[in-house]
Image (cartoon, rainbow, N blue to C red):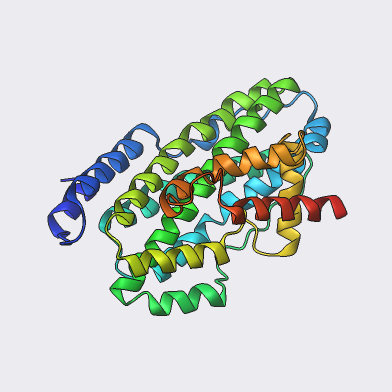
Length: 300
């Protein structure tokens, strides 16, 4: 009996839509079987112009490396925020998502070192006071549902950002002639990100349909106040993210490009949280966060 099958036997939460639960278990099992962590010895790190790669995409690789390696801390945060999660969530983030992402980080860290960039220094164990406070409240089931919803929404936005970024980085490396790095490191990583995105999207929509009106109201409020660009927890990191957007060409069209990016990243939560707001193309707080990051980068 697999871990997922064992979890199915143990877990019987009355409110949970079992059709959603079954879809999630099947999805996680398929991800685990079809996308094991990328073997570190499968990568070809040979570069034609490591100095050019570092100059053109060094900031992008460094940022992605840190974010991927900080998954170790993210798991600690999830254990705090979700004291009694559905077993499928625990199976996903502990057995599938975390091992995959850590290997992404190790591959990228090796790449940036060989390209002459500094070794990454991720935060793997320091949890913010705000998260500790929310974790203390999460022992109440009605609050934990809100924590779970925020977790899923963050996952949706994070993974969509990753998909877009890895696609652009892959193209940029090919344009530089760095085929080995693009095809054996970036391409395998980007193949694993859509599966993570799909998990969060299915889980978010399933939980949203179960939440009480007051829970939805509070989720909207907290999401507006807490949204931040992926991997940015302070002004320096937000500035770095602005540089990532510029290096990847997201800002090549100026504010129009940033709006297009916000529309892609915020699409799922726009459809769920703000469905009644006709005419919106993206949640305003998503666009504001990206604009702020880019302004910080331009100010240097």
